[in-house]
Amino acid sequence: MIIAPKIRGFICTTAHPEGCAANVQSQIDYVKSKGPLEDSPKKVLVIGASTGYGLASRIVPAFGGGASTIGVFFEKPGTERKTGSAGWYNSVAFENAAKEAGLYARSFNGDAFSDEMKEQVIEAIKADLGEIDCIVYSLASPRRTDPKTGETYRSVLKPIGAPYSQKNLNTDTGEVDSVTIEPAEDEEITNTVKVMGGEDWELWIDALKEAGVLADGFTTVAYSYIGPELTFPIYTNGTIGKAKEHLEDSASRMNESFGDGTAYVSVNKALVTQASSAIPVVPLYISLLYKVMKEADLHEGCIEQIERLFADHLASGSAPTLDDRNRIRIDDWEMRDDVQAAVAEAWEKVDTENLSELSDFSGYKSEFLKLFGFGLEGVDYEAETNPERPLPSE
Ligand code: NAI
Image (cartoon, rainbow, N blue to C red; front, side):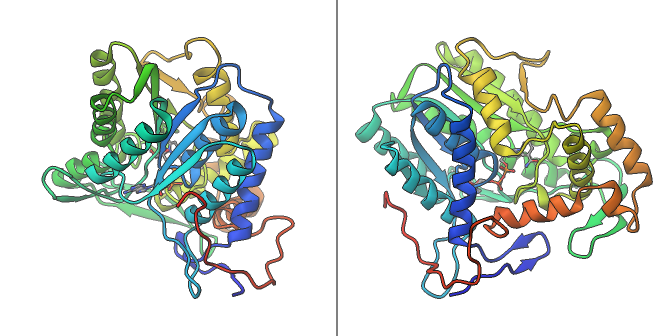
């Protein structure tokens, strides 16, 4: 099959196996170029390990610290006639590279919110690794079925209390128009917290603890975002922000109960991922931010962000540096006053006509395609390729 991108709104419904492999390889190469981590965890579980921040969180300890990794994700394998999802091909590529490097890697494809998945992973830890010393929680999902009640909750990306109107970029057409989003109902707020808050993170840690597979002094980290004031109504002060508040409360709750072990929330930079491209207003902000940060030589992608997270905080040999709310801040460069002032100035001026001059929309689009394995150097996109790729560990 010859595989080309098929974009439907903010999703691409095809993915290229060789392109995804090239993407994973370039992330591995980056990590190797940074040299070994000082004090890397050695047995790492990544929940949400197939794309975006979670994939980078699997690559960094594996290739920077020689860690054994277990990855959990929800992806679609390819068949003879239909391409799989990018996260599937990324995971196949990761496992192949890990195997070649002599690193243990095992993956579980299914619903991380379920009790069954937790049980399967615990069995694998018991059988293969004995214990885990670092758990990265990097899920981004539109829905969650509560394993106790069987009820399914859907998350929404909405403001709270009042409608929010802001400039918006139609990433299909390149038009800058405006969008008004009506505020969430109370039930939508509760549901979003159920899906994207810390409840499932706590359930994972409780289950691992109960099974006796957490190493002494283990660490666990989940990811959050803050961003600029202009996106506060849709992010930080919106439904997703409430969920992130809950995530931080989960970290405090776990820290009070752990004894030996620490939970962290790391606030990361806004980046093009499958999850962020679905948030209104954010793609325009990211396009302007990329331009400013690239010009200032401060730009980072997921792999650079997570390499810094491990090198400076989680695997540095000393305790992470925390802000006044106990969070790790790798969004520090994004939030620099000069960066934010330049983005705010561009935000005021940006319209459809000057978009390509004021923003890095072309960079946004090429990063978006790269998420699905398109536009990578050295890949022959005209060549026939087999979409059916098994996971080596299955
Ligand atoms: P992503 O969409 O690239 O990755 C989501 C991951 O979750 C994938 O591995 C997917 O397979 C997995 N997943 C989704 N539902 C699942 C389920 N039911 N069972 C098992 N796996 C499931 O997302 P991204 O952007 O990397 O987000 C990860 C975390 O980072 C989220 O908490 C997000 O809020 C946070 N974050 C993202 C930022 C961004 O700009 N992209 C910025 C700061 C934080």
